[in-house]
Amino acid sequence: MYDTIIVGAGPAGLTCALYLLRANKKVLVLEAKSYGGQIVTANKVENYPGIPSISGVDFANNLYKQVKDLGVELKFETVLKIEEDRTVITAKNRYQGKTVVIATGAENRKLSIDNEELFVGKGVSYCASCDGAFFKNKNVAVIGGGNTALQDALYLSDIAKKVYIVHRRDEFRGEKRSVSKLKEKENVEFVMNANVESLNGKEKLESITVKDVEGKETEIKVAGAFIAIGQAPRNELFMNVVDLNERGYIESVDGVHTKTDKIYVAGDTRVKELRQLTTAVSDGSIVAVTAIREMSED
Image (cartoon, rainbow, N blue to C red; front, side):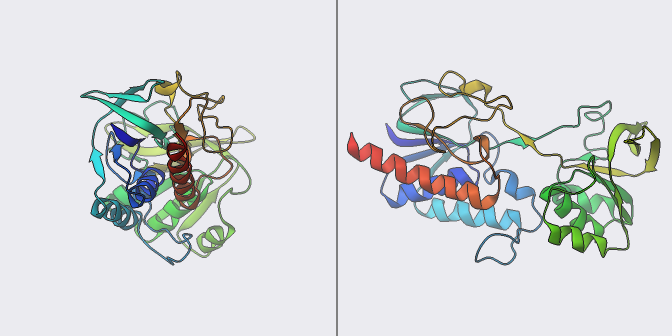
């Protein structure tokens, strides 16, 4: 019997574990892939209070080491189901918890156009910091208008010959400071009010076709296309214990509690206004303190 089982080892899940472990609780963290979540794809994190600049990988490693030193039990197993009695079923085992925290984050959203899956690893990428080095002195496109897209473009501008930023609106949703930095780059070109219609090539990506609001199509020669159009959760497995909104995010009464007693939610996987590193760790700490208090009341 664990005091708390945390599903997901991203910033929200690991922060939750940190607070629980410091309260001498027995904690199990279950993760399907690797610890760190989406933050590991960030080349630089520059908006976390008190840390002027750090790579996403370093942040994740530091957080993991912190909870590891406190004795966290982390198992890399895929969760298949959570029962109302807080039994967590994985592909390998069954675990029982007094409380359960769902902190599974979200995955990269796809363009869902022809050749996208075909060209993954052959020009199409969802991680600029992972794959950017392969496109040194080549033309690339970044697709999206949020902070991730802007950060990807900044990172790639120091590597690629030219960076096209393709965004479907007439202004960016991301931070103005990043936009200003990009405007100062001689090798960055903005392609606004345009959608990517197709990814073209034979054995690998050779160009993209974009269509503007007037219906005009333009082919842009690029060797790489970095897709940064947001994220989507995968919470269908938990529908028996939580309510989901129309986009698949977990509903909560107060940002903490789900519809099932002693099953909580934290981080990007829940309905919330802002999905950032700061709000993820905030969620993790609040859920942990709530779980600690409610376990003591039983």
